[in-house]
Image (cartoon, rainbow over all chains, first blue to last red; front, side, top):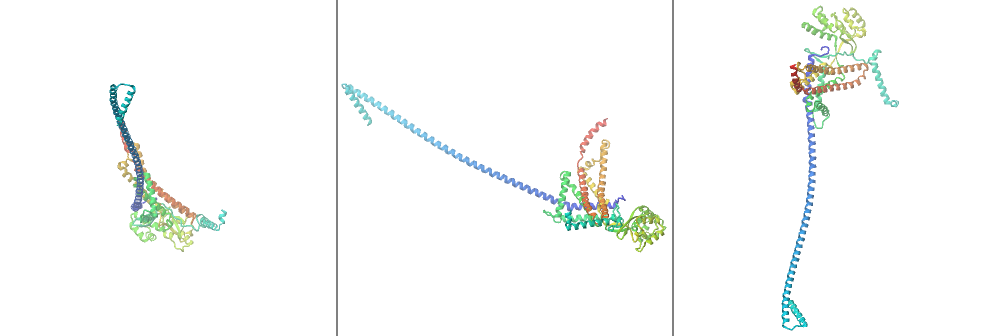
Length: 166
Length: 432
C-alpha cells in the first residue's frame, strides 16, 4: 500500500472531497437542471394535450354543424313532402266530395225525374182510363160508326191531351 | 503535391513544419545521443505515490489533492454559470448541462427501466463530472512540471526524523528539525541511535533514484547509494559551492571516507564535471492530475460501490439484497459458494474501478512525458488530444459502469420462488 501511495489520510481526504462534490453537484446542479427539464417536459406535454383537445373539439363541433345541417335539410324536405301530401290529400278529398255531391245531385235529379215520370205516367194512365171510360160511355150512348168513333177518340185524346197540357 | 508546393504560402508553411520537426528531433532524446539535445527538459522522477507539497502536523498535503480541489472548483464555477439565470430558452452552459443530464436520464431510465433509474443519477453524474474534470485538468501545462526541488538532504532529513521517532528518540528528531541535517550529523557523530537511524534510512532507500539538476534541468539520475558510513557530509555532495572545480571533485572523492556513498554519486554516465554546482534531489510538482493518485481513484471507487450496495438494500430490503449473497450452506451448498464469490466480486469491482482509472491516467501522463522527451515542442500535441479523449472515455466508463452495477443491484433475484422450491425439495431429501 505504501509503495502504491495509498494512505489512510489521503484516502479519507479524497473520500470527503468527493462526498462534498457529489452533494454540491446534487444540490446545485442536478436538482435545478432536472427540475427545469421536468417542468419543461410537463409544460410541453400539457400544451400538446391542449392542442389535441382543441383539435378534437373543433372536429367534433364541425361534425355537429354538419349533422345539424343534414337534419335541417331532411326536416325541410320532410316538411315539403308533408305539405305536398297534405295538398294532394286535400285536393283528392275535395274532388271526391264534389264527385259525391254531383253523383248525389244526379241521383236526386234522376229519382226526381223518375218520380215525375211515374207520376206523369200514373196521371196519364188515370186520365186514359177516365178518357177510355168516357169514350166508352160516349160510344155506348150513340150509334157507332167507324168514322164517328175515330173522330170521337181523336177528340177525346185531343181533349185529354189539351186538358193535360193545361 | 507539386502544385501545392508551388504556392509560396504552403511552401513556407511546409518548410517551417519540417524545420520544427527537425529541430524537435535533434533537440530531443535522439539528438541527445548525438551530443545535441538542447531542448531536453529536466529528467523527471516518475513514481506511483503522489508527492506532498507541505506537511502540516503529520498530515501530508498531496499535489493530487490540490488538483482534485481545483477540479471541484471548476465544476462549481460551471454549476454557477449553468444555474445562475435559469431560463426556458437555455443559455450555452445551461444548454450543455441540460443535454448532459438529458443523456444520462435517458441512459439510466433505459438501464433500470423507468423512472426509478433516476435515483442513480446524482452519484453517477457526479462521478462523470468529477472524473472528467480531474482528467482534463491533468493535461494542463504546468501540471507535473511546476514545483520545487526537494534535495537529497531534505529527503533524508524527513526520513531520518521519521526513523528517529520510530526508534523513540523524539528529542533527537526535534534537534534534527531545528539544526538541519549537516549540522546535526556533525554534532551527533558516534551517537548510537542516530547511527542506527541513518543506517536504516540508507538501507531502505539505497535504490531510490535522485535527479541531478543543472539549474532547472535534470541531467541525470543517480541512486542514493549505501550509507553505512553515515558520517559523510551530505551537503557537500548534494549542495556544493559553484566554484567547486573538477579537480576539487577528484580531491573530494579521493579524500572521502565514504567510498560507497560516493560511488553512488559517480554514476557511470556522469562525469565528475557534470556534478559541478549541481543539486541532487527530486522535483516535487505542485500539481499532479488527481486521477494519477490511487487515493483519489480508490475513494471514488469506494463511494461508487458503497452507493451500489445502498441502492440494493434500499430497493430490495436487507433480506432481499442480502439474499443475493448469503444462502444456507447446508440446504444449498452451491448457491452459498456462488454467493461468496459474488460477495468477493463486489470488492473486486472496487479494485478494478480503482486501477482502471489510475492505470489509464497514469500511463497517459507518462506517455506525455515520454513524448516530451522524444520530440520536444510538438510531439506532445497529438497525444494531448488522445489524453483528452481517454479522459472522457474513462469518465464515461466509470459512471456508466456504476449505473449498470446499480441497476443490476436493484433487480430482484427470484429468490422467494427458489426458496419455496428449495423448501419443498429439501423435505424429501431429509427423509432419505
